[in-house]
Image (cartoon, rainbow over all chains, first blue to last red; front, top):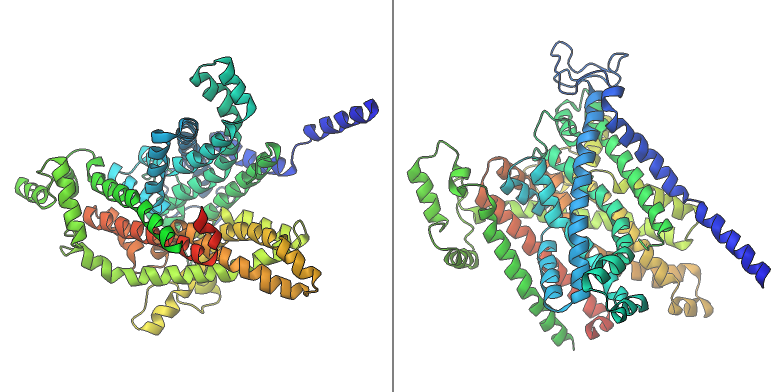
Length: 283
Length: 312
């Protein structure tokens, strides 16, 4: 019996060391994109907003790898700096609903009664609006800009985190380890923050990896519709919108930024799948 | 039993409707500064601003304002459009059919795409087909819907010019024909999510006791699939679509702009750019009503189809 358990322990340890392949693949794809965004000044040779009206709509060349746009700006530079803009906004736009939603969900689930009812009715009201419609309304009311986009996305998407975490909290609060902390006489804040949150947060983390894909899509869509980050700041959505009028002659202008979005989404989705496997969370 | 379920479900609607009207009412107060001045622009005369404040009831205390707002809503009065100088409600009624028709195209198209793919994946979970469907879905979920539309415009507008790539046409046949590409775009954007949920419910259905029993009684694989698997998948598809109606509406709003369709979505974006508050507020209300109605119908349809739901 002792020999069996020793082998079992070794096998378990080996399993643990092996990361899910999806995590590695997703991490690699995303690593390249984030790396390019961070080191943007090193991998581009042009300022993304500098216009060169003598050299507009030029095709790919040694000087301009992906050509230039209708104002003679280098497309590769705008793509890389666009990654900087969009990934940064998406990161903040996923972090703030993650924190707010997780806290709302854990407190609603733990305390129940009136707090729970209020939070859940509020969530019902938010999901009565289509995601894009409510985000567009809020951006309209708050005025264009990065701050408005982040606030708008936060107002809408905290709901998913709250619902997921609330469900997990309802299960967790009757588990023995939580009952034990109560018997020990720990303070409520300590029980919630030190014992429940660490156990329910993994589901929220896994959800965040698919939610950030939706946020990136929302950000580029707002940019495409002319409601996003104000120009001349490079943004993938705005690039695709301004390329659309040259679709018949320069179709690459509006398709290349889309490929960047798809690759980013793919990297994040793979990362999410791998993370779900690692944390053993059902997606 | 069903009547009680319906009554309870309708009762649950009350706080939602209250919350939706409250949010729409307060939306004007989210605008930084004086709302009327903000929407009329800096060059508006003080008398014009005062007139708008009076028309919108902004010169009353907040509770009275909310009451006036509700009173206008129940009379179908969504105010005057600032840009078109006409009734907002009339404007929206004219645009609604395009959006509803496009929603139907998108919903039907996504079912046509998703059901076969999900079935293929669910027949042998973990098999080659399952993996291929999953890879396609993972790539598809990250595609911006307007980008899919742009790619279809390039493909069908420039390479194989079969379908119109923009506009709505003048006659009914041309309306129906011009919505093919936009509808396909929406279907492609919604399908990855639909396939994912459908695959899960199909695997569950095919692994259930009654399917095992049918197999034991000698039902052929095709009978098991069509009679037990697909029927469940179709019901599941409708409910997944119902739950995700907000997502479907969102893609419709965006896609109308890609294909220059005269629906509510393109009007909303144009009105945001024109700073036409009553129109933006009115369209938001229409979409919220649509979503709430679809949620309700989905729940009721489910209660009719599956009596167990009524017990919970």
